[in-house]
Image 1: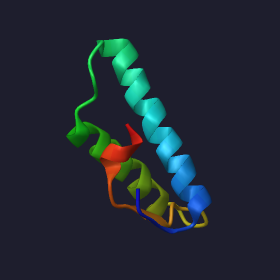
Image 2 (image 1 turned 135 degrees about the vertical axis):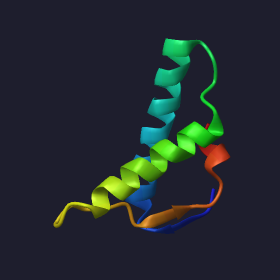
Image 3 (image 1 turned 30 degrees about the vertical axis):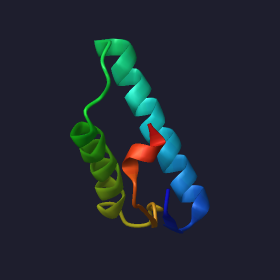
Image 4 (image 1 turned 90 degrees about the horizontal axis):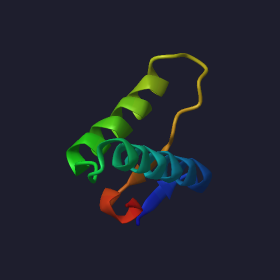
Length: 68
């Protein structure tokens, strides 16, 4: 996976996406569609931009599929 920026932010984002995919699997008994996982990632990152003073994830994930 290519990471640019703060590695700690990237690591926490990867862990969040892994947990999200695992929750989906346990609830629906099927893999989470990649498009849905990407949308969730974007929703989380965009949420941090709406609130002043909140730390946001300052990295880029080049290969989202590598976290699954």
